[in-house]
Length: 143
Image (tube, rainbow, N blue to C red):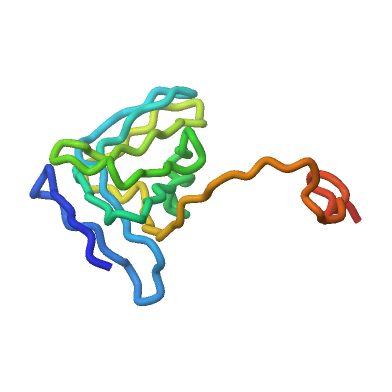
């Protein structure tokens, strides 16, 4: 799948798979930022990406992002294919969960992204789904 990317900061490396088995590409912080304790911050990633029609992106923390004292504010970010203009910079919304200020230096890998194909659905309202009840939310791990 070919995906167009515009680096808003040419000094940053292009996102890349870091190992042959990696499923996501790492993204870099485009400017040094300090996030105060227990506060949120927008980490600019220095790229605008045009996803192909029929796809969406997922922006997530790297597995090591928590070591910086950060976690994504919204769990993961969903990026629609129509968010792809020249200045639609991708940003990582992070929560500093520590009691100290956290500084993220420019060029630090802070997030990763994946691209998925999808199919639009249509909803059909019914009175019964025709399937037996399974037992409630979280029921498979109750034993």
